[in-house]
Amino acid sequence: MKRNFYNFTPQMKDLVSIITPCYNSAEFIEETIQSVLNQTCENWEWLITDDLSKDNTVEIIRKYNDPRIKLEVLEQNGGAGNARNKSLERAQGRYIAFLDSDDFWYPEYLETMTGYMQENNVELVYSNYSRCDEHTMQPVLKDFLADKIVTFSNLLKTCRLAPVSTMYDTRRVGKFFFPIKSKREDHVMWLNLLKEIPAGHPVKKTLAKYRMRENSVSRKKKNIIVDQYLVYKDFMGFSTLKSLYYTTNWAINGFLKYSKIFN
Image (cartoon, rainbow, N blue to C red; front, side, top):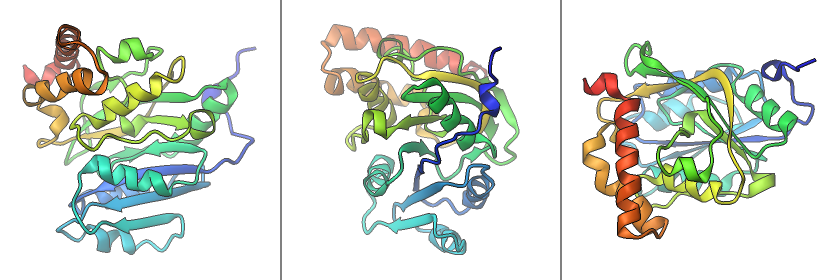
């Protein structure tokens, strides 16, 4: 009989460390906080690093009197990658999960992801996620589907792993930090991680919402071609020709991923 992994409850109550950078997030942070507080898995710590916000983000976070929420406020703005690294340095959990300060998890996210990893003995998993309007949180594109095994090889051509819907096991692979000199820091980090393990595995259920921000760096594909090229040239150490080949593949796949927006 095939077991229903999506309703599996982990027997091992291993701590999950949630990694969140935030900067001027007052408009959305309360909805994000509520999505974490509503998790069916309660064994988590939340390492929020504020990157010197100029609005009242910090005041909003401090209203929540929950010892699992651990806020650090930086003295100097250093970017999202640096803020994530500061949270990672403090993380004590077996599992590392990422949640940006404007995104959202469904209540079963942590339980489903950790349960799947334990039952299937894998190091990294990713799930479907909704791509939503930044104000209404209504879908503006079809859900991004976790429909493929992810390897280092196919991750070079397109980044299928989004922080909001990806989790890994530090007991199996250790901690992986973000390069602070790249604007494509998440892609570099996932590539470095996939060098060390055979594959990342899909959880074929929509468990998160990604807020499509108008000013999001990841949406400005034409402006980050050079940054993506440097992922291959500088961080992977590829030749110029090989770097151009993978940058072209990434650009084509990125256009297809967001084709409704560009058309």
